[in-house]
Amino acid sequence: MPKAKYEQIYKILKNKIETGEYKPQEFLPSENTLIIEFSCSRNTLRRAISELVKIGYVQTMQGKGVCCIFQPTDKATFTLGTIESFAESAKRNGLIGTSEIIKFCECIADKKISDLTGFKVGEPLYYLQRLHLMNDMPMILNHSYFRQDIAKGLTCEIAQNSVYNYLENILGINIVSSKRTVTVEYMTELDKKYLDLGEYNCLAVVSSQTFNSDGIMFEYTESRHHPRYFRFQDNAIRKK
Image (tube, rainbow, N blue to C red; front, side, top):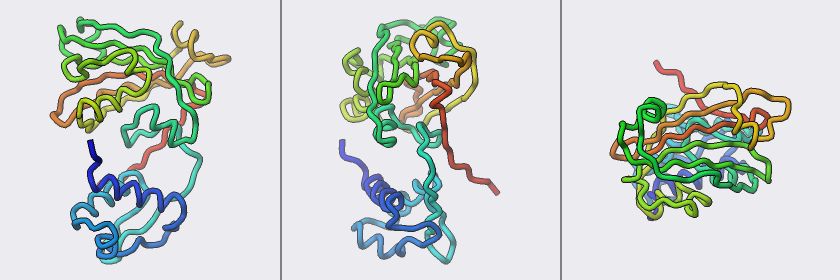
């Protein structure tokens, strides 16, 4: 499935900012200049710019233009403001990401699963346990539930690579938003077994309910992060 034009422009501009072609506190080329450069409509360009605003790379200034406010920092292993797969996160950090499937099965949501995830009782689901490693270091233990009627044909082999790549590029699902809760919890026996926690007895837990373009929650994932490598970064905007 081809990427939308604004996404292509967003990635090009993002790369130019990250590589220093557009420097901090300097203005990007004018809107008209960029429209000509990318052969796009004004709305398409503005949508790309709005995505850069969301991640804290630029700030729009009425009557002046678009100012670069990006400041290089240590890379965050994961981000809260965007939805990215583990494979995408590994690539962004310049690391080798691998996944090990611990468990894959089909199940029906009972009351316990419903209370945990938000899926309706009786909903047919895929249940997936995965261990994610970066450069062979165990970083995350994931417990995921996917609706069977949306993640059709999901298999252990597909999950070994990238579930999101399968959903978006094979099934054509548009992943739109995710509600997230971040907590700190005591380790479980599974955490202790797979994450090599050493002196730690607690870890960061990110629980996510993810929705498609029809507003349907198709995934619930509980990501249990090794505290030594846990670092989230977000961009906050003050509302008037």
